Length: 297
Ligand SMILES: Nc1nc2c(ncn2[C@@H]2O[C@H](COP(=O)(O)OP(=O)(O)OP(=O)(O)O)[C@@H](O)[C@H]2O)c(=O)[nH]1
Ligand SMILES: [Mg+2]
Image (cartoon, rainbow, N blue to C red; front, top):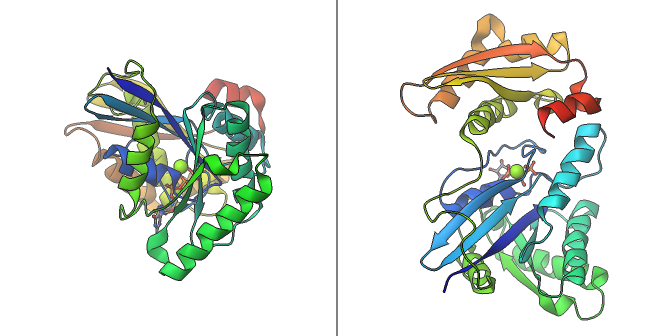
């Protein structure tokens, strides 16, 4: 008999959820960057080992929204964490447990309260950045937050994992525990599939990843990418910004930035791909419901 289930990763922006997802499935399936709000949709990464399949669900970072886009990202994160078998709230080592972390832990506990079969994990990520004392302190801090927020008997259902998504330390212990929680069920994905991201969407994500990494301040948040032509080897990605002035910043002096973005994205695509990038302005799209609807947020 096979076993299969879902494990959601939630947490405030930038704690390392997507980096962990990629580490868990052993392939890059979700884009990552040092800038918060990198992930904008739910991304499923599939790990199949023998008779057990775990579908890990990466989600946008939970935060206090300031735009319509932000609100939709929170909604997407909460929806992605619904109906899962395991919910994992991630915090990071070396940074005090704040309101955002408490909100993530609270969301996980609330989901588990409604579903008595659901298991909860608290992940303390980025342990590579700090010493063992600091890791221990953070585990205690996380436990304190759980005890403060958990209703009767719930705290005992929580497991704690210190780990580093970056160097892999502690990740296997988490994977093994999650695998052991999976219920008897047919596989949800074919055994050789590693993610649910459609090919065209992935190309747009790779372009956005480079833009997020190479731009600053508000610009990463103002960018949306979509594929407008997918006739392999010809792929055209349209880069939408919110203001005319941002167009120049994305293109860069003499087209330099856009060129670098194209080169870095192409390196991760099948050889022979012709990648064309176009920049257009969609005024204030982050705050416009009609634009967000059209873009699929
Ligand atoms: N030192 C260290 N850095 C990490 C680790 N995991 C992730 N990072 C870094 O933290 C930053 C954010 O990582 P992401 O995986 O994009 O974070 P996220 O939680 O998915 O962020 P959002 O998608 O914005 O919610 C990146 O610069 C990562 O390289 C880790 O274990 N150790
Ligand atoms: Mg992410």
